[in-house]
Length: 331
Image 1: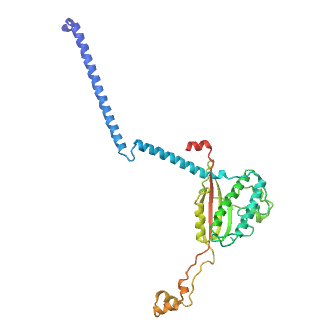
Image 2 (image 1 turned 60 degrees about the vertical axis):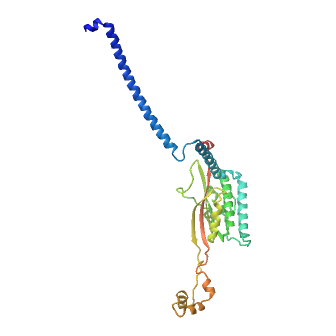
Image 3 (image 1 turned 30 degrees about the horizontal axis):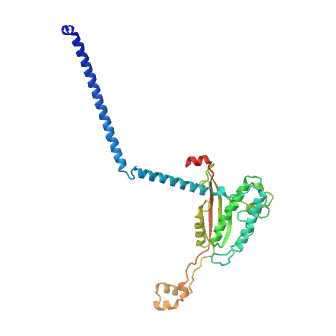
């Protein structure tokens, strides 16, 4: 204490220097720690950068531009798909009930005549068989074109007529033997068929696709169901489905049912069971004699001829009805 009192100024200066040294040492230590942390962060960033640069594809300028180009192409493809799914909106539909009913009756007459005068692809005139009073899904209007009470149904009827015309044109080109049934979703008010008799009401019954498998989404996608039943060879079904796959209209196939027509299996019935076994296995008598006893026509004749089958194809017309603002957001 005596030294400090005698050298007060020196002691104060020394104390200040000690405090300054301690503060400097602390700051130096803190800065070293911060630099060490930043170096660790830098090393980690370099490691990540090297990992990204070695990735495939790496985020080089060329790859980034290729990615942007790919996004533009995908956006254009999405717009093309959306346009295809909105083709139904471009169908020219009428809201005039009288005009629509006249168009439906003209449609019935035209396709009845077209079936009667059908020309196959090989230029052979072969009529397509139709049931009596067949109206291609519009049986309730074949006798009297009663205008539906609901005005919103009228353009839908016109749309259904145009879609069925499209389907029938594709089917006629596939050379069917007959058309047994054409069904559509009947959306008209039931009063349309009232007073016309039970036969007419039964014929006007349509069908509805199971909602569990339908593409319908309220406020986004509207659908219309159709079901065609026709007979023909397997090639008829193949041609019909292949033509629909061109997607001229947004129509998808929901199901295909095949039923073999009765009395269409042609078999060979040999006169003698022994000679039949002999012809197949050569176990009865001489094999050469057996071959001589079998007529060439019977050997070449197929056991089962190509069958005419009944095909039922369920289809769904789909149409995107999203508002314009929603479309832009999705793009």
